[in-house]
Image (tube, rainbow, N blue to C red; front, top):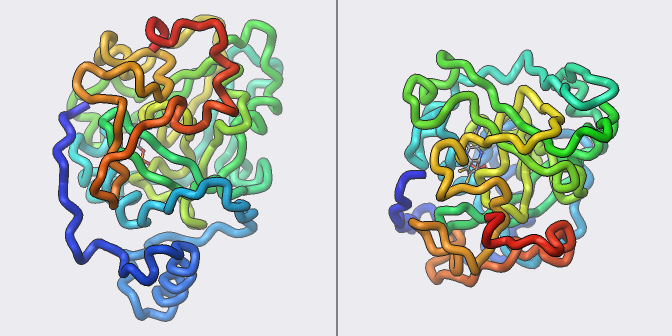
Length: 310
Ligand code: MTE
């Protein structure tokens, strides 16, 4: 990944302090105001998702501003600068869209996006996202556990890993004209990581349909792993017996391992993993083991050497 340059947030981008401490109220106000034409539509650009079960405040962290979540992205299919995806992802066509689920399963199936949107109740999941480049965000995703999809295809006993493949289309995704990564983008999880209830398929954020730059129409989110494990704009999910080779492992095998669990004790050669800058904040904060989800996921790795299996 390209070197991260610290970009000071302009004062015009900072939420007024009176509203800052009450994001939900701010959301209601801004959604209401933008609907009535008082705010530019760029504040909230998307279509609201219906029937989203609201979260019961699972995290005390403040939510990152919608604007930051949607204008500071890594999505190399649309360019390698943080602002490129917001500027270039307009060319992505999110309908029609299907995800093919195949491999070591009894019931391989092609799921249409409309079916995926209704596959399980949509829930808001507020998760920390920790990028390997040492910045982080707190994002109210909308989605459901990936396990909901996987159990429908009945994995066989040979399904040890799950591979995720993003769209490859050089016309819709102009960044694919450069060989920055070996396209299509691929990620992978062990089957127990994929079945873990914290692992979600996300179809939106802040109650809205997923913005294109964040991986529309459907993406993976694995909150205890570095952000790059969360593949965007997924078109294929393969259940396999052998550990898949991911795009980042291919690009830099000494820098990006298969597991990529957030680990403050193991530095990346180019970025410390001990601390992180929360986007919208100035002081760095310590990075937590498993990104703060150790209670829920550490047992998946008991007995494993997490320095060797980075
Ligand atoms: N998925 C695809 N298809 N292409 C990418 O370049 N970048 C990854 C991940 N998923 C990436 C991707 C990286 S490096 C990060 S940090 C997260 O997406 C960023 O997600 P966000 O833009 O929604 O914060």
